[in-house]
Length: 326
Image (cartoon, rainbow, N blue to C red):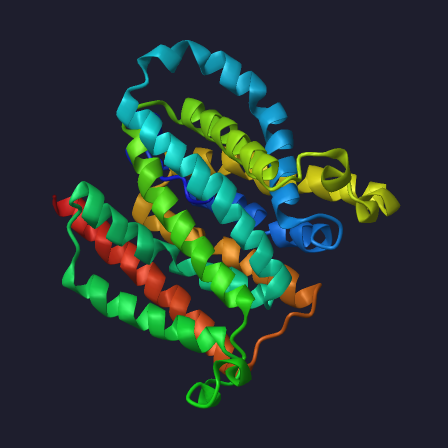
Protein backbone atom coordinates (compact mmCIF):
# COMPACT_ATOMS: atom_id res chain seq x y z
CA UNK A 1 0.00 0.00 0.00
CA UNK A 2 3.04 2.27 0.25
CA UNK A 3 4.51 1.37 -3.11
CA UNK A 4 3.24 4.55 -4.75
CA UNK A 5 4.96 7.03 -2.41
CA UNK A 6 7.50 9.07 -4.37
CA UNK A 7 10.44 10.15 -2.20
CA UNK A 8 12.45 11.75 -4.97
CA UNK A 9 12.08 15.28 -3.63
CA UNK A 10 12.59 14.60 0.06
CA UNK A 11 15.94 15.94 1.25
CA UNK A 12 16.60 13.00 3.56
CA UNK A 13 16.26 10.61 0.63
CA UNK A 14 18.85 12.25 -1.59
CA UNK A 15 21.78 9.98 -2.39
CA UNK A 16 25.10 11.29 -1.10
CA UNK A 17 27.15 8.21 -1.84
CA UNK A 18 25.52 5.13 -3.41
CA UNK A 19 26.28 1.89 -1.58
CA UNK A 20 26.71 -1.47 -3.28
CA UNK A 21 23.98 -3.04 -1.16
CA UNK A 22 21.52 -0.16 -1.65
CA UNK A 23 19.83 -1.62 -4.77
CA UNK A 24 19.46 -4.97 -3.04
CA UNK A 25 17.63 -3.29 -0.18
CA UNK A 26 15.32 -1.71 -2.76
CA UNK A 27 14.78 -5.15 -4.30
CA UNK A 28 14.15 -6.77 -0.91
CA UNK A 29 11.64 -4.12 0.10
CA UNK A 30 9.85 -4.37 -3.24
CA UNK A 31 9.83 -8.18 -3.06
CA UNK A 32 8.28 -8.07 0.41
CA UNK A 33 5.57 -5.77 -0.94
CA UNK A 34 4.97 -8.39 -3.60
CA UNK A 35 4.08 -10.98 -0.94
CA UNK A 36 0.82 -9.25 -0.03
CA UNK A 37 -1.21 -11.45 -2.38
CA UNK A 38 -0.32 -14.41 -0.14
CA UNK A 39 -2.35 -12.81 2.65
CA UNK A 40 -5.00 -10.84 0.75
CA UNK A 41 -6.26 -13.83 -1.23
CA UNK A 42 -7.08 -15.95 1.87
CA UNK A 43 -8.47 -12.87 3.65
CA UNK A 44 -10.85 -12.29 0.73
CA UNK A 45 -12.58 -15.50 1.82
CA UNK A 46 -13.10 -14.16 5.35
CA UNK A 47 -13.77 -10.42 5.05
CA UNK A 48 -15.21 -7.81 2.75
CA UNK A 49 -12.45 -6.05 0.80
CA UNK A 50 -13.07 -2.74 2.58
CA UNK A 51 -12.85 -4.40 5.98
CA UNK A 52 -9.51 -5.98 5.07
CA UNK A 53 -8.09 -2.57 4.16
CA UNK A 54 -9.54 -1.07 7.35
CA UNK A 55 -7.84 -3.65 9.59
CA UNK A 56 -4.63 -3.24 7.60
CA UNK A 57 -4.63 0.47 8.37
CA UNK A 58 -5.41 -0.10 12.04
CA UNK A 59 -2.49 -2.47 12.50
CA UNK A 60 0.02 -0.37 10.54
CA UNK A 61 -1.11 2.73 12.44
CA UNK A 62 -0.37 0.97 15.73
CA UNK A 63 3.08 0.01 14.45
CA UNK A 64 3.79 3.51 13.15
CA UNK A 65 2.41 5.36 16.19
CA UNK A 66 5.87 5.88 17.79
CA UNK A 67 7.13 7.26 14.47
CA UNK A 68 4.18 9.61 14.23
CA UNK A 69 4.57 10.85 17.82
CA UNK A 70 8.29 11.50 17.32
CA UNK A 71 7.52 13.78 14.36
CA UNK A 72 4.32 15.38 15.72
CA UNK A 73 6.15 18.62 16.57
CA UNK A 74 6.44 19.25 12.81
CA UNK A 75 2.65 19.38 12.32
CA UNK A 76 2.26 23.18 12.71
CA UNK A 77 4.78 23.70 9.91
CA UNK A 78 2.73 21.81 7.30
CA UNK A 79 1.26 24.09 4.64
CA UNK A 80 -2.27 23.90 3.29
CA UNK A 81 -0.91 22.74 -0.07
CA UNK A 82 0.92 19.84 1.59
CA UNK A 83 -2.20 18.88 3.54
CA UNK A 84 -4.19 18.84 0.29
CA UNK A 85 -1.65 16.57 -1.41
CA UNK A 86 -1.49 14.33 1.66
CA UNK A 87 -5.27 14.04 1.91
CA UNK A 88 -5.57 13.00 -1.72
CA UNK A 89 -2.64 10.59 -1.42
CA UNK A 90 -4.13 8.95 1.65
CA UNK A 91 -7.60 8.74 0.11
CA UNK A 92 -6.65 7.65 -3.40
CA UNK A 93 -3.62 5.51 -2.67
CA UNK A 94 -3.79 4.20 0.85
CA UNK A 95 -7.58 3.70 1.01
CA UNK A 96 -9.46 3.50 -2.30
CA UNK A 97 -6.62 2.17 -4.45
CA UNK A 98 -5.95 -0.62 -1.99
CA UNK A 99 -9.65 -1.54 -1.92
CA UNK A 100 -9.67 -1.95 -5.70
CA UNK A 101 -6.45 -3.99 -5.55
CA UNK A 102 -8.05 -6.32 -3.02
CA UNK A 103 -11.17 -6.61 -5.20
CA UNK A 104 -9.03 -7.26 -8.27
CA UNK A 105 -7.34 -10.21 -6.56
CA UNK A 106 -10.77 -11.58 -5.67
CA UNK A 107 -12.44 -11.13 -9.05
CA UNK A 108 -9.61 -11.73 -11.51
CA UNK A 109 -6.51 -13.78 -12.19
CA UNK A 110 -4.17 -12.55 -9.42
CA UNK A 111 -1.09 -13.07 -11.58
CA UNK A 112 -2.54 -10.85 -14.32
CA UNK A 113 -3.54 -8.29 -11.68
CA UNK A 114 -0.04 -8.04 -10.19
CA UNK A 115 1.66 -7.72 -13.56
CA UNK A 116 -0.76 -5.19 -15.01
CA UNK A 117 -0.19 -2.90 -12.01
CA UNK A 118 3.17 -2.08 -13.61
CA UNK A 119 1.27 0.41 -15.76
CA UNK A 120 1.30 2.83 -12.80
CA UNK A 121 4.47 4.71 -13.88
CA UNK A 122 2.76 5.75 -17.11
CA UNK A 123 -0.06 7.36 -15.14
CA UNK A 124 2.25 8.98 -12.59
CA UNK A 125 4.56 10.32 -15.32
CA UNK A 126 1.62 11.89 -17.16
CA UNK A 127 0.37 13.27 -13.86
CA UNK A 128 3.77 14.82 -13.16
CA UNK A 129 3.69 16.41 -16.61
CA UNK A 130 0.25 17.93 -16.02
CA UNK A 131 0.71 19.02 -12.40
CA UNK A 132 4.43 19.78 -12.06
CA UNK A 133 5.25 20.56 -15.70
CA UNK A 134 7.75 17.69 -15.87
CA UNK A 135 9.28 17.24 -19.30
CA UNK A 136 8.34 14.19 -21.34
CA UNK A 137 10.88 12.72 -23.72
CA UNK A 138 9.44 11.77 -27.14
CA UNK A 139 10.43 8.18 -26.43
CA UNK A 140 8.00 8.18 -23.49
CA UNK A 141 5.05 8.00 -25.89
CA UNK A 142 6.62 5.10 -27.81
CA UNK A 143 7.24 3.01 -24.71
CA UNK A 144 3.88 4.00 -23.20
CA UNK A 145 2.09 2.79 -26.33
CA UNK A 146 4.02 -0.50 -26.19
CA UNK A 147 3.17 -0.92 -22.51
CA UNK A 148 -0.55 -0.25 -23.08
CA UNK A 149 -0.65 -2.66 -26.01
CA UNK A 150 1.11 -5.32 -23.94
CA UNK A 151 -1.32 -4.66 -21.10
CA UNK A 152 -4.26 -5.35 -23.41
CA UNK A 153 -2.85 -8.71 -24.50
CA UNK A 154 -1.95 -9.55 -20.92
CA UNK A 155 -5.49 -8.84 -19.75
CA UNK A 156 -7.25 -11.29 -22.05
CA UNK A 157 -6.94 -15.04 -22.22
CA UNK A 158 -8.09 -15.22 -25.85
CA UNK A 159 -7.12 -12.00 -27.69
CA UNK A 160 -8.31 -13.44 -31.00
CA UNK A 161 -11.87 -13.22 -29.65
CA UNK A 162 -11.79 -9.54 -28.71
CA UNK A 163 -13.73 -8.66 -31.85
CA UNK A 164 -16.39 -11.25 -31.04
CA UNK A 165 -17.03 -10.66 -27.36
CA UNK A 166 -15.04 -9.16 -24.51
CA UNK A 167 -16.46 -11.81 -22.19
CA UNK A 168 -15.37 -14.62 -24.51
CA UNK A 169 -11.95 -12.99 -24.83
CA UNK A 170 -11.57 -13.38 -21.08
CA UNK A 171 -11.89 -9.81 -19.82
CA UNK A 172 -13.41 -9.69 -16.36
CA UNK A 173 -14.08 -7.29 -13.51
CA UNK A 174 -10.75 -8.19 -11.93
CA UNK A 175 -8.91 -6.59 -14.85
CA UNK A 176 -11.07 -3.49 -14.58
CA UNK A 177 -10.45 -3.23 -10.86
CA UNK A 178 -6.69 -3.58 -11.47
CA UNK A 179 -6.74 -0.74 -13.99
CA UNK A 180 -8.74 1.47 -11.60
CA UNK A 181 -6.24 0.61 -8.86
CA UNK A 182 -3.36 1.54 -11.17
CA UNK A 183 -5.01 4.91 -11.85
CA UNK A 184 -5.51 5.67 -8.16
CA UNK A 185 -2.02 4.50 -7.18
CA UNK A 186 -0.42 6.34 -10.10
CA UNK A 187 -2.18 9.61 -9.22
CA UNK A 188 -1.31 9.02 -5.57
CA UNK A 189 2.35 8.88 -6.55
CA UNK A 190 2.01 12.35 -8.07
CA UNK A 191 0.32 13.62 -4.91
CA UNK A 192 3.02 11.92 -2.84
CA UNK A 193 5.60 13.97 -4.67
CA UNK A 194 3.74 17.11 -3.68
CA UNK A 195 3.67 15.91 -0.07
CA UNK A 196 7.43 15.34 -0.04
CA UNK A 197 8.03 18.95 -1.08
CA UNK A 198 6.52 20.10 2.21
CA UNK A 199 7.37 17.62 4.96
CA UNK A 200 9.90 14.94 5.98
CA UNK A 201 9.41 11.38 4.75
CA UNK A 202 8.81 9.83 8.19
CA UNK A 203 6.10 12.33 9.01
CA UNK A 204 4.51 11.96 5.57
CA UNK A 205 4.48 8.17 5.79
CA UNK A 206 2.86 8.09 9.23
CA UNK A 207 0.38 10.86 8.40
CA UNK A 208 -0.67 9.05 5.25
CA UNK A 209 -1.64 6.07 7.39
CA UNK A 210 -3.64 8.38 9.65
CA UNK A 211 -5.45 9.89 6.67
CA UNK A 212 -6.02 6.44 5.16
CA UNK A 213 -7.46 5.14 8.43
CA UNK A 214 -9.80 8.12 8.71
CA UNK A 215 -10.94 7.55 5.10
CA UNK A 216 -11.52 3.83 5.69
CA UNK A 217 -13.47 4.56 8.88
CA UNK A 218 -15.72 6.98 7.03
CA UNK A 219 -16.18 4.56 4.12
CA UNK A 220 -17.25 1.76 6.46
CA UNK A 221 -19.49 4.15 8.41
CA UNK A 222 -21.30 5.33 5.28
CA UNK A 223 -21.57 1.75 4.03
CA UNK A 224 -23.02 0.57 7.33
CA UNK A 225 -20.13 -1.80 8.02
CA UNK A 226 -18.66 -0.15 11.09
CA UNK A 227 -20.08 -2.77 13.43
CA UNK A 228 -18.87 -5.99 15.02
CA UNK A 229 -20.80 -8.20 12.61
CA UNK A 230 -19.10 -6.70 9.55
CA UNK A 231 -15.69 -6.11 11.11
CA UNK A 232 -15.49 -9.70 12.35
CA UNK A 233 -17.97 -11.72 10.27
CA UNK A 234 -18.98 -15.35 10.74
CA UNK A 235 -16.29 -16.59 8.33
CA UNK A 236 -13.56 -14.90 10.40
CA UNK A 237 -15.09 -16.20 13.61
CA UNK A 238 -14.91 -19.72 12.17
CA UNK A 239 -11.20 -19.30 11.32
CA UNK A 240 -9.88 -16.78 13.88
CA UNK A 241 -6.26 -17.96 13.76
CA UNK A 242 -6.12 -17.66 9.97
CA UNK A 243 -7.71 -14.21 10.08
CA UNK A 244 -5.44 -12.82 12.79
CA UNK A 245 -2.21 -14.26 11.41
CA UNK A 246 -2.95 -13.17 7.82
CA UNK A 247 -3.84 -9.63 8.93
CA UNK A 248 -0.68 -9.35 11.02
CA UNK A 249 1.50 -10.63 8.17
CA UNK A 250 -0.20 -8.27 5.71
CA UNK A 251 0.43 -5.27 7.95
CA UNK A 252 4.01 -6.21 8.86
CA UNK A 253 5.78 -8.41 6.29
CA UNK A 254 3.94 -6.79 3.37
CA UNK A 255 3.35 -3.35 4.91
CA UNK A 256 5.47 -1.55 7.46
CA UNK A 257 8.69 -3.59 7.26
CA UNK A 258 9.22 -3.30 3.47
CA UNK A 259 8.55 0.44 3.74
CA UNK A 260 11.55 0.92 6.02
CA UNK A 261 13.80 -1.39 3.99
CA UNK A 262 12.76 0.09 0.65
CA UNK A 263 13.38 3.72 1.54
CA UNK A 264 16.68 2.94 3.24
CA UNK A 265 17.66 1.28 -0.03
CA UNK A 266 16.54 4.32 -2.04
CA UNK A 267 18.68 6.54 0.19
CA UNK A 268 21.72 4.57 -0.97
CA UNK A 269 20.72 3.96 -4.59
CA UNK A 270 20.55 6.05 -7.74
CA UNK A 271 16.96 6.45 -8.96
CA UNK A 272 17.86 5.14 -12.41
CA UNK A 273 19.12 1.92 -10.84
CA UNK A 274 16.34 1.56 -8.28
CA UNK A 275 13.66 1.33 -10.98
CA UNK A 276 14.97 -2.01 -12.21
CA UNK A 277 15.25 -3.52 -8.73
CA UNK A 278 11.65 -2.50 -8.03
CA UNK A 279 10.64 -5.15 -10.57
CA UNK A 280 11.32 -7.65 -7.78
CA UNK A 281 7.85 -6.80 -6.53
CA UNK A 282 6.26 -8.26 -9.65
CA UNK A 283 8.55 -11.28 -9.61
CA UNK A 284 7.68 -12.08 -6.00
CA UNK A 285 3.96 -11.57 -6.63
CA UNK A 286 3.97 -13.83 -9.69
CA UNK A 287 5.88 -16.54 -7.83
CA UNK A 288 3.20 -16.50 -5.13
CA UNK A 289 0.08 -16.22 -7.29
CA UNK A 290 1.27 -18.70 -9.89
CA UNK A 291 3.28 -21.03 -7.68
CA UNK A 292 1.00 -21.23 -4.65
CA UNK A 293 -2.42 -20.25 -5.96
CA UNK A 294 -2.00 -21.83 -9.43
CA UNK A 295 -3.06 -18.65 -11.24
CA UNK A 296 -1.25 -19.56 -14.45
CA UNK A 297 -0.82 -17.44 -17.57
CA UNK A 298 -1.13 -18.44 -21.20
CA UNK A 299 2.09 -18.21 -23.26
CA UNK A 300 0.98 -14.98 -24.95
CA UNK A 301 0.28 -13.46 -21.51
CA UNK A 302 3.77 -14.34 -20.30
CA UNK A 303 5.29 -12.62 -23.35
CA UNK A 304 2.97 -9.62 -22.92
CA UNK A 305 3.90 -9.34 -19.24
CA UNK A 306 7.61 -9.33 -20.04
CA UNK A 307 7.11 -6.71 -22.75
CA UNK A 308 5.03 -4.59 -20.37
CA UNK A 309 7.67 -4.62 -17.64
CA UNK A 310 10.46 -3.94 -20.16
CA UNK A 311 8.57 -0.98 -21.61
CA UNK A 312 7.92 0.46 -18.14
CA UNK A 313 11.60 0.01 -17.25
CA UNK A 314 12.53 1.95 -20.38
CA UNK A 315 10.06 4.70 -19.47
CA UNK A 316 11.73 5.06 -16.09
CA UNK A 317 15.15 5.13 -17.74
CA UNK A 318 14.41 7.73 -20.40
CA UNK A 319 12.50 9.96 -17.99
CA UNK A 320 15.37 9.79 -15.51
CA UNK A 321 17.64 11.03 -18.31
CA UNK A 322 15.32 13.98 -18.87
CA UNK A 323 15.40 14.79 -15.15
CA UNK A 324 19.18 14.80 -15.08
CA UNK A 325 19.39 17.29 -17.96
CA UNK A 326 16.89 19.77 -16.47
